Image 1 (cartoon, each protein chain N blue to C red):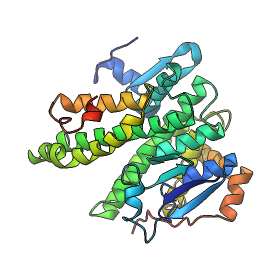
Image 2 (image 1 turned 30 degrees about the vertical axis):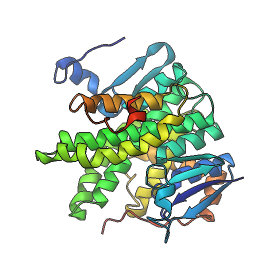
Image 3 (image 1 turned 90 degrees about the vertical axis):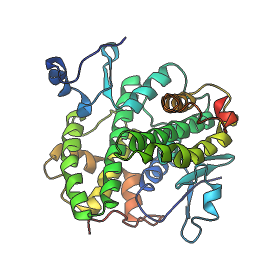
Length: 200
Length: 145
């Protein structure tokens, strides 16, 4: 039976869990919350929020919990402690960047909010680039790499050239993007990937 | 073991640039080539070594959502009690924001059988809040247990 992911039809918190399923060959179905939020879906959600995942009897909320659960099923949490630690810290860095975008999106003066975000983003990118070995963060594909790829994909929607000053990160992004399952998914996405974060 | 470095000291300023993301806490394990920051990453790595990540995928998933929710609770508390200038915010957090969050925990925690990172994370967040107000769990018996 496929796992189901319930969320709005936007890229935001959807992209990462779906890419994990695509790469790992996990069958999934996407349940679009449009027209069903807040009810009846809010009462079905473990913390009254979206996304949530259902896999048989298991029902869990919190997008990073969903991502980690799927990554564990697929076997990409990181084999050694060192790979696991690296994957985990860049996953958390992704989360910091994501919260920065959400803060900008929700600020009363969006232009100013996004300007502040881009300043902080530069620091994040510089720190991330230092952690690369060649054009990868870990020797095998891990959750952390998919997390960074997905947040870069989201940022590219509203600022296409944002990796201009960080060529190694651009190489990383291209490298993950050329993984056959990921390339195929973007050529023919099975779920709506509408852009939620916009500067104006 | 713990190594203390005081913020602002010359030793910290030298170390800061070497730390991924320039923030503490930092975990070092030179024998295994590990040098990581991000508190939740450190917690996950230590939990993996201590076998506290759950015995199967389902226990892992339940533990993970508690870890994330403990962060939500912690961040809401920090915002109300440390980042806000208003004296009403901490009270509002305890009386309005926190009870529904504890309500969700009341439903989930009874299903947790083995000790996991998730329960420790919830314990940590609540312990921190109870330093300020020890009555918050009065109406939440499962969470208190």
